[in-house]
Image 1 (cartoon, rainbow, N blue to C red):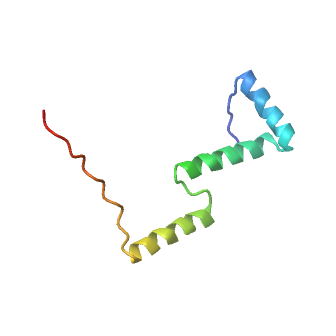
Image 2 (image 1 turned 90 degrees about the vertical axis):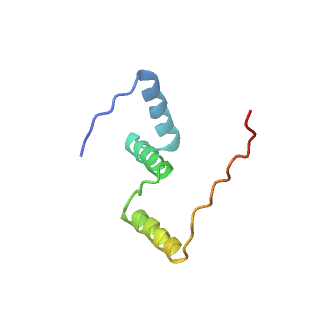
Image 3 (image 1 turned 120 degrees about the vertical axis):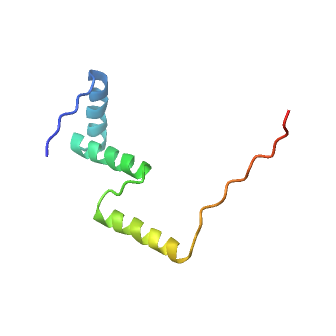
Amino acid sequence: MRKLIEFDDDTFDKLKQLGRDRMATLQELADEAFADLFKKHGIPIDLKDALRKSAKLQDAAKHDVAPPKRARKQGRKA
């Protein structure tokens, strides 16, 4: 599937230079950038990644791991 993305001239020049430096295509740079973005937000990249995350959730449920409780702030009333 093809989609258009618009870059300002300075950004595009930097992407082209980075591609030359790393001997990578613009598509390879975009794939890497989007994979990093998905990872940052906890979105599985592919089926293998989705299955790995699912297995971790099932394992955590089996061991009844509860998230840590947040401590309440103890303060004085004025």
